[in-house]
Length: 332
Image (cartoon, rainbow, N blue to C red):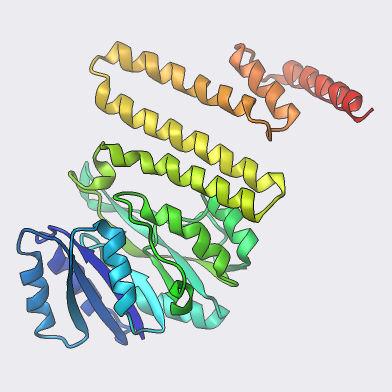
């Protein structure tokens, strides 16, 4: 049986579609846990109405503790062999559960991750597919899975995936208003002995104005904070430098992305915005060059780009010569 955990907070406009997409699944062995996270609209009334017609639906109420607390509450009451997560403003493909369970049984996997569709705000009726960048149907161990996660080949969100219940015996979401998935996923992936990424997209992710992921609030800084936490986790668990270097690059990229969001909302004139856009990539490149775990050749190449040199054949040849010369002197 699958336990589907749905945190709800003021989603009366979307909750009906969400629950209906679960009821239309071809795989029917499930329980649906609807956790009301301090809603002030008709969200709980709608949930109770659906629960009165289907005994597989259970409605819970908890104090306002964001999606992380609501998910933890659902985990405490889940009874299924498998766990999956669904946001109350999103929907599922009718074959979602069947696809995930078949993959879990076929590969004896403890985690199955699939792709998702994403609606476009400028074209609401078009869903853009986002397959996972990780190689489809490839079984990965803990270290390889963590590397794929750091590289961005796996999603930081916990939805569109299936987890064995035992993984959550000791793991829970941290109480954060945003990016709580990114803090938990590294520990989930390294606790899983067999993780598989599959090709189909099974989840419809709704981008909507006013959601926390599209609102510029102080909680958005949790994105870079999650990357810093990931770096510390890699440093403590894996003493080799490669994973730590990849995690540090993730910190730089996440901070840069946050800076771009600040520019979008704070730069009022076109000229000022263009000036910042021209400065930020150089700042990111400078941070990469200063990183102690970046190779010498990468530093030389990055420095040449900062100086305005073009990586043509002559420059590449000279850089290779300098790299080998410095490397030979360092080995002596």
